[in-house]
Image (tube, rainbow, N blue to C red; front, side, top):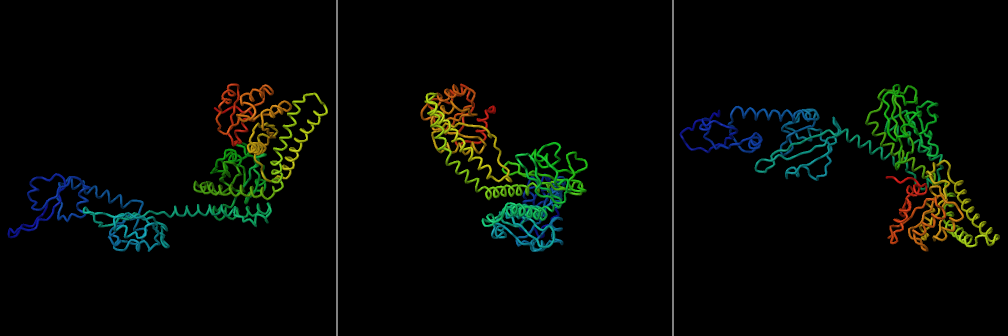
Length: 559
């Protein structure tokens, strides 16, 4: 019930404003000799009270109780939020703060400027003048760095509070502890910087430092960075040898001599956790070494381990293993950072591999250049001799024998050049897979650039390539030599594509034939007709190694 003073002298006085909330009985309404404003819900009451200049609130007991209960609930939520919350005046002084913010301030901040209460931290913001922006009614966000007290880093989001007439009357500040996030980002930045350090070598250093010196330098850097950034003391790095599937030791600290020299392969069984990780290319967290059947003793007294694969461009480079004398010695965060740093290690090892190949393959590169330059002229000699042999038949044994000798010697030249290149290559660098080794491939292509490209890609895959410019030359070669596959352009310059395909099939019924095209229009429908006769593959230029391998090996087409 509203307690009003009687009107002394019955003089007319300015009527005060009273806020009426909820259903109010008629008898109570009669007692109100004031200007009344009636509202229906609690949210409207809170807004109206903020700037409405009301002298009283009239409400029935149930509505008033609900309003107070809601207010208490809101206050309880704000007080126990995991963030620091404060309401401030327009000049930034704290009017109210929740317990979290009070704890971060170290003393009651009420009546003091918020930033002063927080220890006068360094403020970083994308907004030039945050206070001016707040006064204009804009929300702002700033990063606070405190040199004393905890937490060290806070993100503060400040929002204006508006009166019903649109004036900014107060600010609310929400503070969040971001110290852990900042530290994590620092560690990530340090890891990436460390990765750059692993591969930084200027041109003069590259020219002067030998491969063994580079390896030792990389190992020293790895030891230092693993200790400084990840704080691991027991470590093992192994390199993957694609030729043998072996994981060769590169670097170890704290491992037993037996473990350090143990022969391991990238296999899921009988090769420990390291072999499993290399085979599956997945990380492995061993919480209890004694209870894990895959664990092979590494360091004396080790009770847990963490092993991650080293992968660069989807290719396995090696493995990185660390061990701890404690059970559950590695957390999920340790796993995350180890995997991140392992990417840097893999990139560094890959770069070292490339630099080593660059330094030691000068002779091999020269041989490769020679091979490319002589490839087409020798192909022309072989093709011309083959055409003549086909025309002569057995009419002149002397000429035929000379032509056969020319063909044989020309092929021998190419074989010798390849052998010299292989001998000049660095045996310490793991070579790329050569799935077409031992295969002889005939390429019918009139464009010299495409013929050179065919030599480059096919010989890089291990095949022996011979190219001709016309279908007639190709058919002449097929008459005298066995090939493992034929690649023919869809429109040979001297014969239709489908006619060439049929002639090849008549000469060599079992040899796989693939048509090649640069997306040109196949007016004669040679591809469609050849497919109907059993041709599996159509290859698009430029050639893709995986498609070449499938066509030459006549692999089943994937559905």
